[in-house]
Every structure is written in C-alpha cells, then in structure tokens.
Length: 221
View 1 (cartoon, rainbow, N blue to C red):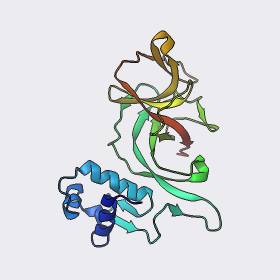
View 2 (cartoon, helix red, strand yellow; view 1 turned 30 degrees about the vertical axis):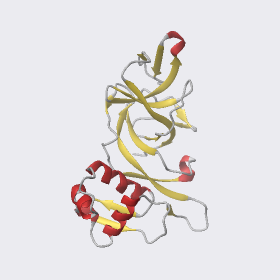
View 3 (cartoon, rainbow, N blue to C red; view 1 turned 120 degrees about the vertical axis):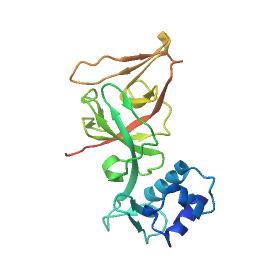
View 4 (cartoon, rainbow, N blue to C red; view 1 turned 120 degrees about the horizontal axis):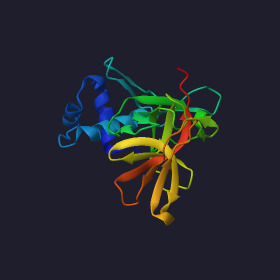
C-alpha cells in the first residue's frame, strides 16, 4: 500500500517536473501547505526507493517509472532486484564527525544480491571516512575509507561485537559495540590496524545507537 502523500506526489509528477519545484511548493500543490519540507522530502525519497521516480535536482530532471509499484527490476531472466537506498551523510571511522539523517546526499543504487538484502525498508547508506574500522568485516567485506556502509535503522537490539552507527552529542561514528553494563558502561571499540582509543560511555549519557551495519559496498575509487 502506498502512502496518501506519495499518491498525491505521484499524481503531481504527471503534470509537474518535481526536480524544479521547491518542497514547500509541492506541499501547497498537493493541498497540504502545513506539511513540513522534511516530510515531503521523506515521501519523495520513498518514491525513489520504490522505483516510481528518479529526481536529479542538480540537472533539473525527473523520470517517472512506467512499471507497476515495486522495486526496479533489472537483469531479465534473473532474480535480481535493483533498489535505491538514501545516502544520508558521512560518518567518521575515527574521531566522530557531524551527522544528521536530514543530510540527504542522494541515492545508492544496489543489487539485492550484492548486499544479501531483499527488502530495502528502513535501510540507509553512510559514506565512511577514516581507518579505525579497517580490520572490521561485514559479510566478508572490510570497512575501509570511502566505502559505503548499509545501516538498518530499525535494528535496535545489539549484541556484543556488532558493528553499529552511534550518535554521540549529535555526532556520528562507526564502531564495534561492547555491552559492559555489568560494569556500568557501554564501550565503542575501534577495529583497526592503527591504534585508536575506545569510547567509554555511561548508559545514561547522551548517545544513541542509530542502527546496525548490515552490509558494505566497496567504493572502487
């Protein structure tokens, strides 16, 4: 089932190039002037993720899919699916850097076979910087500088040694999660060929484990 706002945006896309309309004007055009730009952006992202639209604001272009609702199919005769995952920023694998889920940077188009994930819901991508996790592996792929990690934002149950995206004082870092609450602490540990100090947190500190790293997409550049 498609969200009512997404239905209205799809209908608007039949007559307007959404790449050239501001988010506020879109809200007014679908008779929802009270809707925040962030809400409209979220539903546009969902439409792109599902393969209904492809919007390039830099070039001012928009493409509508002629396919039925669903993900973009590719490789005829094979059971692969291409889906789009929003890239929402950069996380440092060393000292934490500023991160926000509102920092939308585009989409990462990937095959479900590449990452071993069939359902893109609640997934987003982060581009990594730094070397503090260069020995860590997710499904046999190391996390190196410039790679993309796929985060499951719905996953909130973490086990020792899970690799997670942590938000500390509105800053983000990718680290290995160690639950040491028996000693009154949470430890975020590097996994690197270099010497990085762990981050020690009290369970009541201002931090949030935003999601679990479930896949790595290597960046050949």
